[in-house]
Each structure stands twice: as C-alpha cells, then as structure tokens.
Length: 117
Length: 115
Image (cartoon, rainbow over all chains, first blue to last red; front, top):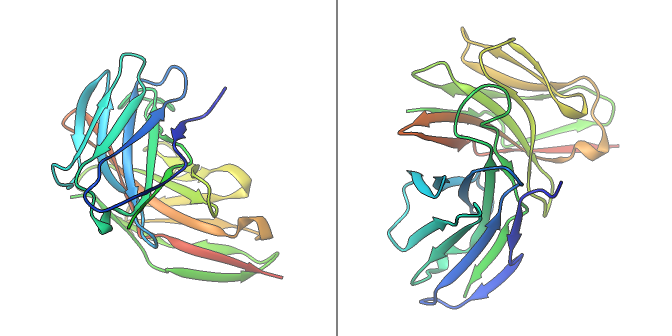
C-alpha cells in the first residue's frame, strides 16, 4: 500500500503570496493532521481533520487554513506568506482519532519544503 | 498541559556501543507516548509507542523504551548502535482533547554514530 503522499515536494514563494499544499492519506485512513517543522525544531501541530470536520487547531494565525475532502485528502492553505513561514510542512494520517491498537497512530508523509523569499 | 522534554540535543556514540536517548514527560492524564525517527530529507517514522499496556515497549530496528511513571521518563535505548541509526529522534506525547488527537513533539535529539 502507498504511504502518505504530499505535493509538491519543494516550493519557493515570495512574501505576501499564497500557497496551497496537498496531502493524500493512506487508503482507509479518515483523519489527516498538519504539522510545521522549522529547521532545527520539532514539528508543531497546525490542524487535524476527521471525516471532513476540523477536530483540532494549533496556535497558528488565521492566515493558515485547511480542509478535508470527501475522499479524505486534504489541503493546507497559507495566505500572506511571511519569511517565518519557511519550513517543512508535514501531513500525517491515521485510521481514527482514538481507540485501541493502531487506530490512532499517525503516519507521516515526506513533507513539503516551503521557502519564502 | 502535556509536554515532553528531551534532555540531550546531541548524542554521539561509537558503532556497536549502547544508545540512550532521554525523555521526560509531563501529563495530567495517563499519557500515550511515542518515539519517532527522522532521517535526513525523509519523513517521520514511528519507532515505538506506549499506551498503558506493558511498561517495556519494543520497537523496530532493535529499539526499546521503558515507561517509568515514578520518574516521568520514557527513555529510548538500543543495545548496539549501527551506522544507519544516525538520525534525529523525537519523543512525542499524544493528547486526546475536544474530539481530536494532537501530537506534541520534543525538540529532538540528533544521534551521531561514529566508526
């Protein structure tokens, strides 16, 4: 089975522009989460979606938004880009949000490297 | 609030010697704890998890971790390091809240393995 896929792999944008990042979860997974990893730091939680509904939001400004589609894929949108938005954006999927076994384990994609100049 | 503290930002070992990566956690509830590994230019891979079953957890590639409630620790160990173990390791706590499941990552430990 294919793992979590993300596109594009790399992206260069200018300050003030808008960007859309895409994520396809593992087949059968209904939850998608987004994380931002700034160079030299651990990933920070941005959003979580389950069954197309937002189930969690991290401490990020309103310039960040996301949505989940009926096929469980997801988009992360960032408006009015700032230099500080330069980071690796990671998407993770899980079967569910909680429960026994591996149902809530999150599996990560390779990430999208965003550079803002 | 739940959090994890990784006590060492860098650890260097010789190939064939034991590995110890230290992690302390803070949690109001019985936590779910994980270790993830990130190789250069790769995504995060789950090494192992603790979810209130056995306190000694075995993971992939010979890694294991022991949950010690009295010490609020979840240290990662491996008896014998291999060159391929060189990577960044993250200790992670999971918070189930408001219908969601949020992962909180530590700051990471860079493991270097020398010949």
